[in-house]
Length: 170
Image (cartoon, rainbow, N blue to C red; front, side, top):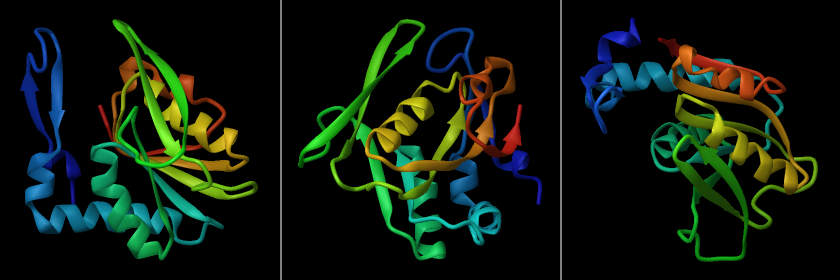
């Protein structure tokens, strides 16, 4: 199955000059969505993992079913102020400012091996911030799994120390 067939291009969203890669057609097609989760599960099934770390919000869409398929805990990484318990945070920079993501303290423990899941790799800032949270907790990022990678934006270079796996490359 060619997953690119289920990604819609939306020009000039969210601002002029941006070509947005929309995953909603993939989500609306059960066969394509299942195929996506199956491919991620095949990749990580035999890895010695302790948890799946998923990044808000679209990373949750793929991380939750993957965690279920692999029978692993799901650890959410959310935008600042969205988690109710004690958290640790990591700031990352964008071309127009900065953002912060958080994870509950104790969700990843010393020595825990995780895969970080998100829908898209662009510049790599969000994924690097999530990896920082894992490592600050004493955990180890075994890899990063993505649905889409925008190769021209160089995000893989920012994540050079990590194994990056993407199902679709543009």
